[in-house]
Image (cartoon, rainbow, N blue to C red):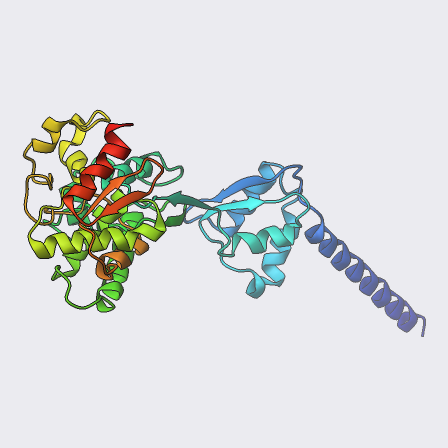
Amino acid sequence: MRLVKFLVGLAILVAIAVFAAYQYWQHRLDAPIALETAQIYEVPEGAGYHRVVDELVTRGILEHRWPYQVLLRLESQSIPALRAGEFQLEPGMSGRELIALLGSNRVVTYTLTVPEGWTFRQMRERLARAPKLAKPGREMSEAQIMAALGQPGMSPEGWFFPDTYRYRKGVSDLDILKQAFESMQVRLDEIWRERGENLAIETPYEALILASLIERETGAPEERREIAGVFMRRLEKGMRLQTDPTVIYGLGDDYDGNITRADLRRPTPYNTYVIEGLPPTPIALPGRAALEAAVNPKPGDSLYFVARGDGTHQFSRSLKEHNAAVRKYILNR
């Protein structure tokens, strides 16, 4: 009888001890990690659970290894596989929450914004300065980049949609370029299907070129379709487009911030004061609004416009009206 009582008492003590140990283990998992400020922690590619826990203990973020060794042994099915990447650890989070975070898709991301109207060259310069971005494309020529994107022989200008792109550490500049290229293709195809009738342009690429001129000519949203209308009517009548941004693009590094009469007469493949019709390629990266304006120009009879100096333009139907506007807004100024 005494033996039975002893065994029962021992079993009770063992159960209490196991319960207490379990509660203490849970307490250690739920205790806040040792951080006073937010910190970025990177899980290296191919790093296993034990290696990561050891490193977190070594860095003093976790106090002990054993709670996480026990966690792996008892609850391995509930532990997500750790993901490579950067994670932001926050003060007050528990060890259990930390392990869950490292197995989630909540990696630290960065943003890269390409403004509407930038050139491909400017986009490349921003990519070259972007933090945490792998940069295999930095040393490539434009031709090599387009070949790497599966578009050999294609001019890159205009083909990358200006937008804000999110990426994580390890993503490459070529990945961003591919995403921007595919985004432009999708939008251009959608907009071309919704084009107006009787346009003086015949292909989506011509729409892309025209949109780039519109993008560079005005930053006023309400003017885009009106600018498009002027360009479209001039194309229909066989008039040269005579738009300054094409002169600037054609000058390249020779442009010093001012356009002279000699510049307007200087023959380049892009100078629409010299060439007929559209330039051979886009001159910038147009946004969606410029693309939509290019295929849905505003009806009217204006054939000229001149900048007022406040970001908007004065539109004219005749050369006489236009010359008067030039005297008012440019020569007098």
